[in-house]
Length: 393
Ligand SMILES: [Zn+2]
Ligand SMILES: [Zn+2]
Image (cartoon, rainbow, N blue to C red; front, side, top):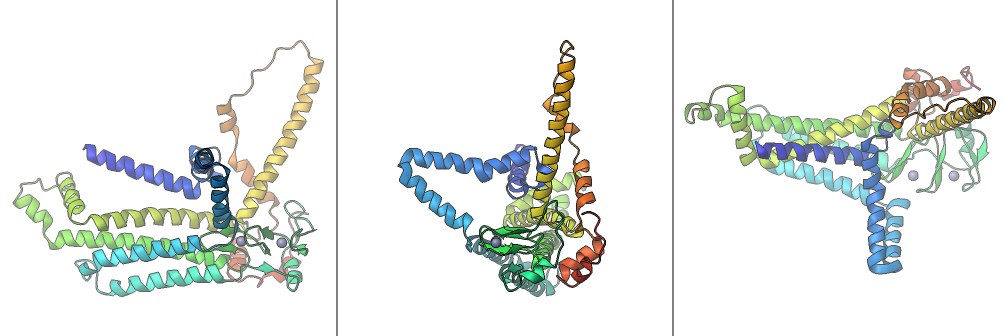
């Protein structure tokens, strides 16, 4: 029983760390422990490490670490691309090595040997397409095309020039500091792809996420069928009940079958759990981005909306405190109200209110079908934008 609890705790801890590391910066985790763990993993731990290096090796050591950091995080580099290929290749290699000998099996036909190679090849193809396609780089020659693509909403975007590229900045574009170029309908810079995700390659990026979720799910389910098939072929239930006298019920058999699988097929179980966790993460990532696509918002814009909303709140708070100051001056002798506790203000914060502000002001949202068309066929339906009556501005 003790070992099982250690396994459960280990699984939960791994899941929390992986989710915090990959998704802790998402707006939905704002103010939660997940965000704090993300901050520690991505910034806090590194900061302590840097201080430790500085303490032991002095300024020279710190400078060496900083120049490595500059190469890895602030300049385009293929490190994460290589890591992606190593993870994909390694997982496929170990899966094939440990499980292909059981295919065809009780539940899986021989065709899965070939379909698995095919789905991984398509995954690599989508990765290459997203990594090396034009995300919508804005240059002096094509800037007019991008300028007419979206109107300025005068909330998040107003007419101005990129201070680095010295060309007009189209609405929804951003200068990527890593790639040092302006990108149309900028979503984010993806380290895994070593490329920006923007106007022209969001469709490939979405296809990549969906396809990799399906690959992981397929792998986890297929490995599950391999294991159940082996138990069936080796008549494990029959042996346990007839020869070992184990009670023929789920409660009676499950611990023995699990124990047998952990002893005989631990590689397959490790791979299955890994694929299941990664498929869950990819599903979450895909749903988050699909939601953005269907409401015609970008990751970059969600941060801009957050800034806009917090600025508005600050202005309102400043107005309210000015009014309160006025009132308190006139009622100098009245009793002081107790200040609101942190907990109450936490629960008072309504994410729904914030979402409403975005829905009301997002002029680029033209209904989910048109939004989807814009992602799949960039520029195709955009000529009608100027004719569309804007909701705002
Ligand atoms: Zn620029
Ligand atoms: Zn970039």
